Image (tube, rainbow, N blue to C red; front, side):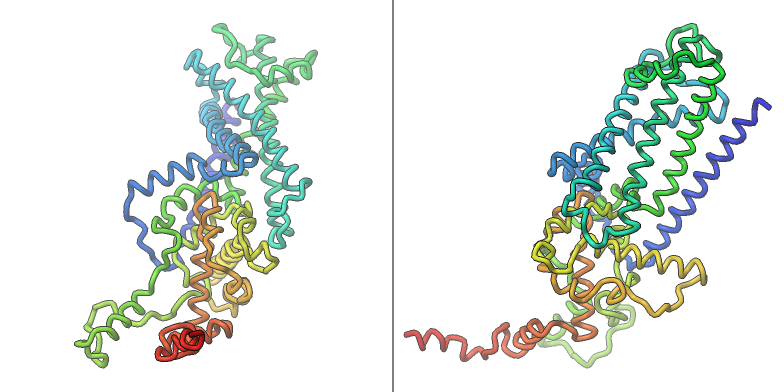
Length: 447
């Protein structure tokens, strides 16, 4: 009978990790629905960028209030989870505070965990206040109504509860050690240092040892089960960035932000046109890779590349991109955050289609028009403000440009002003409606 708690814990741990791995494999499959793209160049530069932006949070602290709070919560999440290792060992083998063998370092670690837990709790409360009470512009977008707003709050509630359970567990454990109750008591001294939870001791004053054990065990179980639940909730939440920010930054674009990619098929066609010795009617050599692509640009998520789909899953919905967007600031419908959220929602819909049918079956929908409106796409000024603002290296502009490319090259559906300019460039070599011989007539008239 003594082994039942260990067996139950092991079952819960294995089930939680197995479900998490299953969901991660689904995300991996969905991302691989996109086009292949080579982002393996310059690994040293990529690792340095990842260390600076994803690990070092360099872009977060550009806005000091939210940035510093996020760094505290981020460090708390990373460091406090070291304590989860001890919980797992204790849960599997039936030990108690097994890492106490580390000596004085153990007390320092527990003290650090408690201080961080308190700071995380304080930071999360401030985050909740900013999101729900302060009426900050970037949290009021139409795309944050309903589930996105609730999801953000659910995560904040989870973190509050987990930190409260951690401190409650330590406080009850501390009191049991003072009461010299086995197996909490150790003749070598107090197991751990409790600078924060010690202030909760008056709550437990006068309680029986059996009651304290129930409180400590309940907090311990709820804490670890809450962590496993939180781990699996990430799949359904915007907080996937906790896991995906690192690969997302690593695979982000290294070229200057204003540099757009060229379609290789179009480049080859232009080179052919410019080569006086080329035969435009000659059939391409077999296996030369110059076959015309099935589609120019993107109208659905399968037309985007894998990094763009990774971007969609990584989006934190923080709204920094939208708050910097000049089109959004002037009242236009474009919101770079919504572009990423729509892409993720459509990708999830495609994934569910595959889960149901074994392979994707046409559903009469696509990313263009059903999720992202043409008005949104053409409102973009291509200024790259959204790309620069994103703290985890997301590039909404690349999706916008690929969808514009589809509209122009596949549907000839550019706005009239742009269509006229393109026609003039084709006919006159410039966006103005004058041939080359007449371009300086205005100068002659002024003379």
